[in-house]
Figure 1 (cartoon, rainbow, N blue to C red):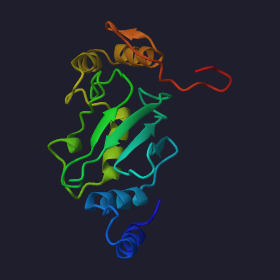
Figure 2 (tube, one colour; figure 1 turned 180 degrees about the vertical axis):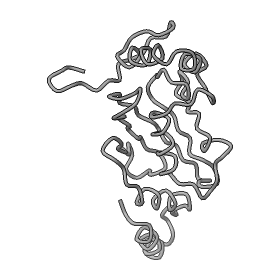
Figure 3 (cartoon, one colour; figure 1 turned 90 degrees about the vertical axis):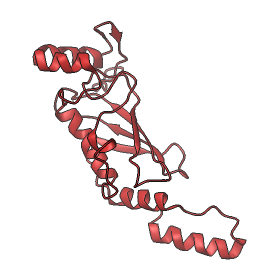
Figure 4 (spheres, helix red, strand yellow; figure 1 turned 30 degrees about the vertical axis):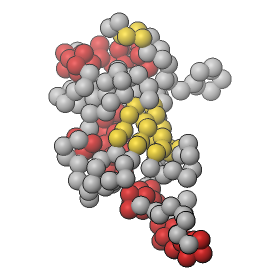
Length: 188
């Protein structure tokens, strides 16, 4: 990806040469580019841009290496509005998951994606927040009440239900697709 300033310089050169027929780089694109350039992602997280020309919409893949969700592969769609950073990104989990802070439709309950968002926060803060939800789910601020009640009432049963859901089983009448990554020599 291009650096922010080189994008702006290139845009200015193009505007002069083409008589301003090119689309302008928005402040949201500049900020997202800056945030992406500053990311230092661990091996358990990666990003993918379905359309390389659109940095406001991308997919983040998280593979927790500890906690209840260890070994699962979860993808999140990030949709960033042109009002970023004044509005938080919209983040959705693409897999159905048994998690107190992620409902069965993929909505994510993370305070900085709602009422605690501030323009000084960046994409790294959001990614760290999502990572933390997988390390320490919060049964006190839930979107999936059944999972939260399960976690509060019996952590061992909650763990079994998480593992069953991740393996593609049925939990409390809901069927889940397998999200466990295949072990070497095993079919997914």
